[in-house]
Length: 297
Length: 152
Image (cartoon, rainbow over all chains, first blue to last red; front, top):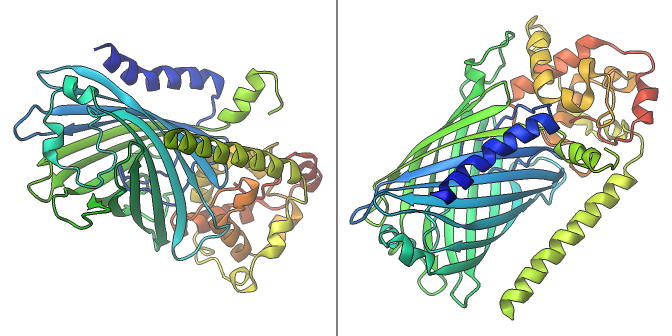
């Protein structure tokens, strides 16, 4: 239970501290996806703090509620770095801390193009009880999640994850495709996965009045993600796939709320996932931190 | 051994990246308006489709306050992080030039791409900027700032 409290309260404590340290917020125009990445990076010097959850049903096992905290920082205009802490509660079992992830996204091209590539490198150190389903890869299937937390925790996974992110914006629509390459560092084969998403704000023009519920503050879309097997058994056999409508509400106060019900597309997938999350962006975090330690902003 | 090498490689990449990013920031004390001259001619000639919309500057102001004011300051007069957009160079630039810069950003100099805002919203911001008019001394202020970004 202590892990649950720790992971759940980290974003709250950070938000409070950051409100005092870097009072200016930066209302974001965030994409609604939970799994798919677009080519938009965090604005330089800004920090985004997020808390997300995934509820999953489980055939032949207990339902789970997984959660992760995210700290995303814009180092430069072409580099964003992000740190995650993961945990989960399995109903009728226990609550456990499941590990951390450190990801970096790089934008190789200076200008906008029809298709904008982004390179993604992540190192993750999680245990087998991790159930956030932030990505689906290789032969990940629902039965993998049926084991108890005690069993899961005994299995340590150190993985290197690479993604090629391709993303386009056209007439208000965003279309993003991600190809996923994962290598478990303990001598297992490369595994593959994919995610794609399409979304659009409910209104393209902003209204002249200040409002919380204007259509332009809402972004809706759909994303799909799944595994593509591994180096030796590439393809759709024994893989799981999900289709998930997504919705984000970018509130003018700087908070973004997201929700997404997800549906498993085959018998290897969880039947139902429900994801939700809240995030807030703090402008000038890097400068504020430098000021705090006596440096120049 | 392999694990150690991979982690070492990752850390090296991150360190080199950070060093390069800092070098770029140091190098970037140049003319903050230079990027205006690099906009392709075709993009410069694009007309603002919302130029006749009386609400466009008002909505643009709202969007500016949300997305741009943090760097470019209240009334677009500039801050240490971003230059004034009331300088003659910006105010005399065509709407198409401002739209293109907002869309593409100046990524190497810390101004992000703003194509995540739908086109009409970017044009609304352009309408707002053009409605402001030049402010005296804006250019001098911008050059005094340490920033190299044109827009943010």
